Figure 1 (tube, rainbow over the protein chains, first blue to last red):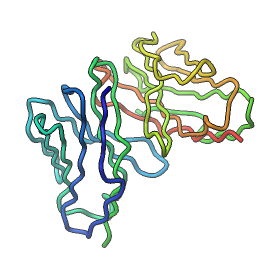
Figure 2: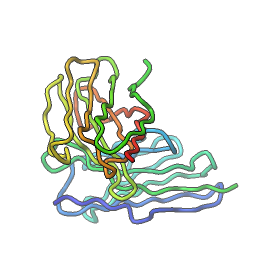
Figure 3: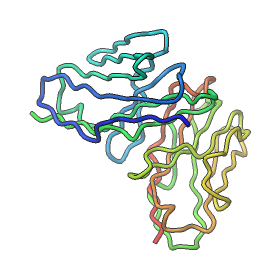
Length: 112
Length: 114
């Protein structure tokens, strides 16, 4: 069955540094992958989508890579700020193409 | 647009009681999703609708759970009877055209079953 792992439950970094979050998947090849941000007590908010034929995508201070050989996506936040503190979820479309499967998320804490 | 609206925001009930969660999707969105989030299992898809028709309910945990979408602007998720293990945050999300791209989530309903 499809499996998705975000291998850090928590990540603590200093303001101004680059945060790098990892998402690994097994057993299939998704057509695309998404990253969401979730703040405490709120629903996830869509950030970026990257397709299998795209190696990298950027949006302001965010950068996502998608390595279909390694079956891995990296999510980078450059020049991190305390306001970036949140839980970040990766999500893959399932093999049948009918639904998203979410990772459990990585909680990022940026200290000033 | 007000975004996806869910009610109630918090629900505390006793085991055995019926619980009804409500969702109003973003106007014009064709897809509606119900998710459940717990610390142990993360965010799990329960069921989704396309144009008010249930497409995949394989994530619904058991017969105690049911969902309806009587029209394009309203959906309910019902648990009857509720059990303590149903305690979780339930999210509704909607999307336009392609069900797997950019889903817009509501604020969630935090359910506690005592």
